[in-house]
Length: 234
Image (cartoon, rainbow, N blue to C red; front, side):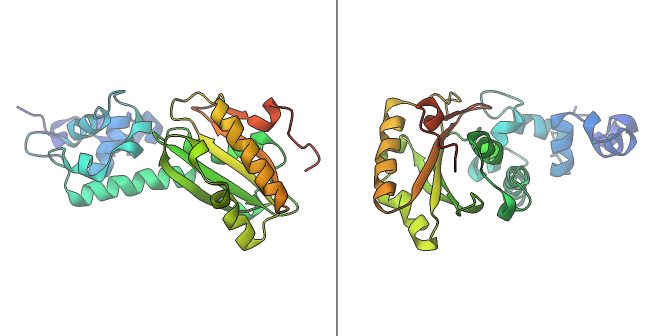
């Protein structure tokens, strides 16, 4: 027989526990249970939360929540369309909260600035994403554009796709960023060759490629720094 949440001591009920002791005292499953609100006839909201958290192989890993699809959420008994959509929305909000509040004041002076800005957005992605940071003459971020979604190799990206948006908005400088789903930020040979292609193509049209940053899981590599190409006078 399943014990109902209301049958637990008040100090063990997620809502009451947060009110009494603060949010930091709650486990991942308890926090998720508050969002879910209700369980099912056979499962409490905490049971349901644990089932969600163990849906992926790593188990009880919050980073995997963003990789659960709507259909996978709805495949869990007790998670309907509305709850699935709410969970996806919360995951996206959490990702966006890691970004700077005022993008117009982001200034890039070195490779670590790029990593600080975009690490949390890319470090847990399960597919390779390629982004281009468009900068003005003072290295203030103008725009971030997505170039490739779900590709297996950044080298497959066409240089004209990388440079198109910079040409459109008149951005004089760009920085390439892509992630390695493996978590290892060491650039591959194809990453380096791709960087050289973009560098030469951008130079021809008067756009300065400042760097190419590879994002791993909590680590990053500047291809320009590694190859001695980083322009310290940018």
